[in-house]
Image (cartoon, rainbow, N blue to C red; front, top):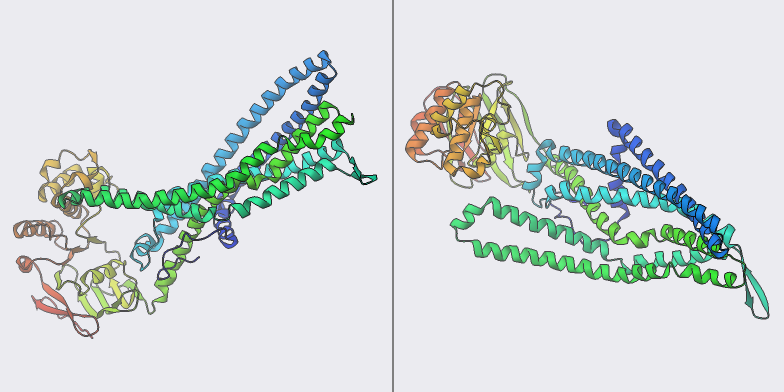
Length: 601
């Protein structure tokens, strides 16, 4: 069930898989190991304790049934009155135990889900996996849905299943003994003689329960796969709606509302078909579950009828046996009653294990592309590309070899036609492109900032957006306002504490200006601008670039895709040019600030 890049997205065409269940248990069972183990085990033992108390109360209720109905049969008013008083105590005990179970169960569910979510988030964010999984040839579908909804749907029901199974085992053992001792044996005519059936109530309960429990997996064998397809369709529909909302302006500008509606209708149609498949499978299972529910109260009365009519059982004993029979059936038919929920749970558990496997698969796919790009410290103040060769995941060469040294404080433009690998080279410098070989050496303890054409602007107060990802604690308001004025955003100077979705409330040019203001505030040592100026005209480009240089004159600045009108601002212009296998990095102009070697193959 691997979902490693290159092997295609995980399939929903599966049923129950023991290996997947074991993998899920191994991963999520980490809650009971390590730093969280003490809390996890205390909550688990507390839950087990109240479940044992519930069994004790259930046994007391069973004995009360015999007491009360025997009193009714004998018309013993005094005994019946005492039974009614005792029932009030039982009600209080049942209520108290129920509250204890709810508190213990839900606390365990919340804490387990919290641990699983944090663990999956750590794995998703580690080693830039959340980016690399998206950039893979066969990206993992909807990891966000898996971390949010699937974790909930895989942990909460499993807690309930565990409670039900634990209770079922205890109840089966306890009430089986009641069926054995109270029911006794049954003698029935057989031919010309008689035959005695020992523990006939217990045998009847076992035969009936095993038959019904064995029937349900046969009838509902396709339910797990249907549930998985439904979950995947839910995630896809949600993704399409989020994508439409985030790109609403572009859709409206392109007059694409009708197409968007059709796409959503098509996606939702797939969801409806998946749901109807679940409904059909559930309908088949319901034939068995409803028949079982109707028969369970009647079957023990039918089994007891011969001995009761012969006067070998009192009415109280019949009611006690019927209650015990039902309890044993609840235990035995636990699978029958929970089959659909188990199928839903398994579908979510499988999606979580696929996500975990994709973490490992992403790392393996990256490591498999040997030799690798080595990142390290340069021995001087230069940013160096040493024997750098970049490929895609399939091994196709994009940049043949690039060797360059860029001095601290240099202003460099990187040019080239579309498709020659400029963005790939920038991502390699940023550490986002792992495929290739060579070395990227940066000055130690020097901050580096990358600004794309669509910078990320977090929601919240404007001051936090200006200082992201650092907190604004050590920056004066006057510095933030100065940066805003320098980038043409003076009207926001008095709105530093205003919170908003700045990526939605600002225009494209304003978002870019705000990102430039962030550079003026943070003053990184090395700045890489990838098409970050393309949204502006020549005058504005010159204005913003000049403000950046004035605010941080010692910074190394690399501009990808700048206009020719900015040429006077640069010390050198480099170009990626196609040359056989991959592109070659060459220098097309230089102000002669340094003698630098540029080589390509």
